[in-house]
Length: 103
Image 1: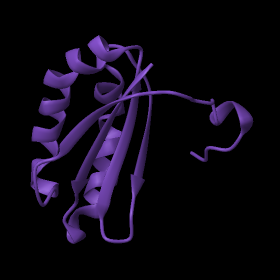
Image 2: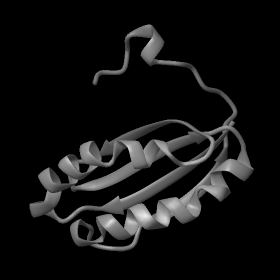
Image 3: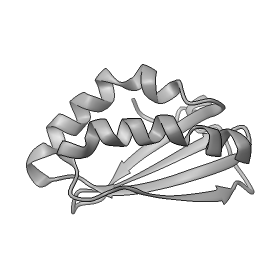
């Protein structure tokens, strides 16, 4: 398994727009090749962190054209260009199956 960690900051007045956009584009998000799961997080300052888990490194890299298209759609809501880091997953546990992850 392989991960992409994306960070970006959302304009303070666009937080609700971002939530709506995510709901409306969930199918496009999951259409990334090899994407198994993703977790979106936000700190108190409007910085978002998205951890996307892929089958392998090739899948994570192959998804980048689709990711860039999603970023382009999100651009009016963001303060700056997102950054992505690629990471080897050394351990993972299915939290949803344990009832830990809330919808």
